[in-house]
Image 1 (cartoon, rainbow, N blue to C red):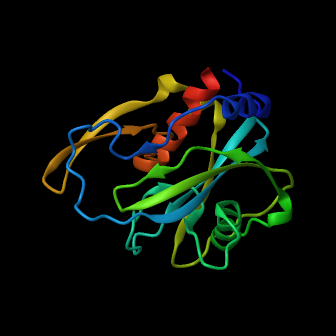
Image 2 (cartoon, rainbow, N blue to C red):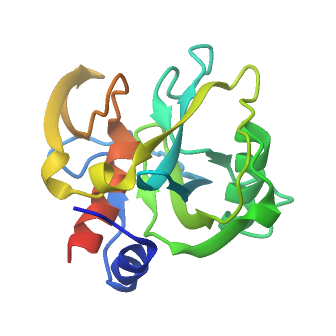
Image 3 (tube, one colour):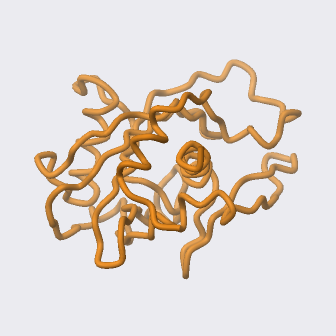
Length: 198
């Protein structure tokens, strides 16, 4: 099913509660005394020859958090950032070379809590100009795009399981080609897909 920016905007206008990596695991025992650190990611749509696409990265296998995983550009909100939007734009510029002037902010999604104790604000945006991605050495192994029609189709998602900290944990996946999109990235996209589907 083709997806355009109007459908994304309409989806954002529909309310939704915050999400977490524990949504599929209501009985999961959370760590005591956990402190959530604010972070932001850029859920960036761009126009491609085959329609709207979503910008993603493959994280370096040397990183402490989520090594080798598929992720949106993003990271911690720094003291110098005015807000989550500013943090997402700064991180996208640092990680993939996306100029802030080339980005139109559409809105934000409800926050998402990760198993690594980040409270992530997904910032939804449209890349309005062509740009050549430049992966930040040491943090990003690859920059690529996936069709929005794929990741915004709720029927494309499946639930998988693995052992984590001694407990069985369920999570969403939405693989595309050689890329295994799962965890927080898949959960954020699933939340947006559900809203776009209405």
